[in-house]
Amino acid sequence: MTDDELLRSLGEAVSPTVPAVDAARVDAIRALATGAAAVAPLRPSRRSLLRLGGAAAAGIAAGATGMFLLDGDDAPAGPPTEAAVLKTATGVQADAKMIAHTWGLEVLLDVSGLDPGAAYEMTFVATDGRRVGAGGFVGTDALMRCRNNGPLLRADVASFVVVADDGTEVVRAELA
Image (cartoon, rainbow, N blue to C red):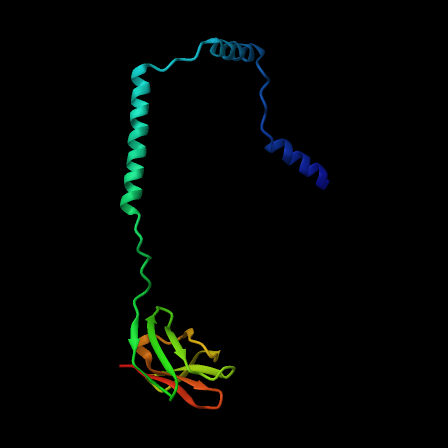
């Protein structure tokens, strides 16, 4: 048996048998459909219209009340932060807050007084002495808002430092 014959034989064995169309049944269905279309549509009663109107008014009132009660001008609260006590180099002003994420520590650093164009790097110092990079930035003559983070949990960070490209330490935080 060839492949084509085998496939044809399998197709015939699997194919469902389609019954012949019963003309009388088709005519009966058409007659029912025509009769249903000829019936006049029902007119709603005054009582059902009043119920529908009352339900719509109640829905609108509930929606308006919900929007009024849920509408708050308060911005969503961000994640909890922890303030860091900083030591800074002469002429540098800085403020830092930390966010303890499940994936690591993030430092929100506001700093000014840095040399414009100079590169700076933040490093986390772990409780076991390891040093882990937490990002970097280029100084400007304006207030900078930096978000630095690294793959150490807050409990594992003993301190963080910001160092200029010449090795000068400009910001340090000793964490408890």
